[in-house]
Length: 212
Image (cartoon, rainbow, N blue to C red; front, side, top):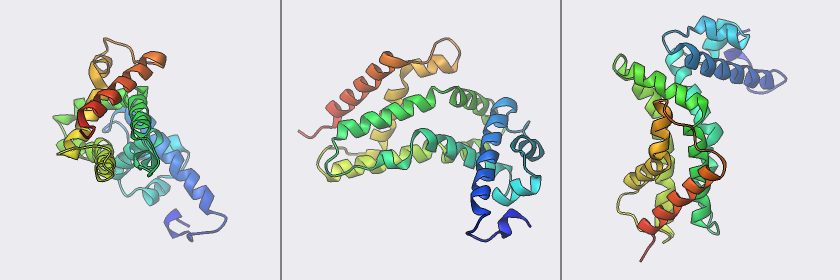
């Protein structure tokens, strides 16, 4: 019986989730190794150890699978809970956790390789670039905008344009080091160096937008 016809609960459900994760992992590996055009649904199915029918039952087409793989990668490093501001939570601590997660994400081997793939595809397939942007960078940016609006309503920040401020925050976290890493003439910041970098970013951001 095709996976999509299985009941919503019962013994088979955990197996379904395991298959979905295996497909996502296989897709991430193959998209990075062979690019989007070089990764067929047959190859992804073989890599995941499932049938092609199973891949299509979880993900309608390759474009959808690509989008979901990007979302899954971002969710690993930046779960949505990071972008919630509890009443008693120090804003600096929340921003530090986001900065640490984002810094780890953009400097990971998978992220660097994916960005290089997307730069190569950008001129050839603008639609695919849009899929990538909406699944990853735009989602993270919108979550950050939501957090900054929360902080503004709570009187913890004073910001005229939360979306622009969110963009500024992530650009500060990237810094010049990430660009050098992307073009292959630098190493990823790690350990104490990375921690000092994100702390400096948060301190600068708070100085710029702290009320009064």
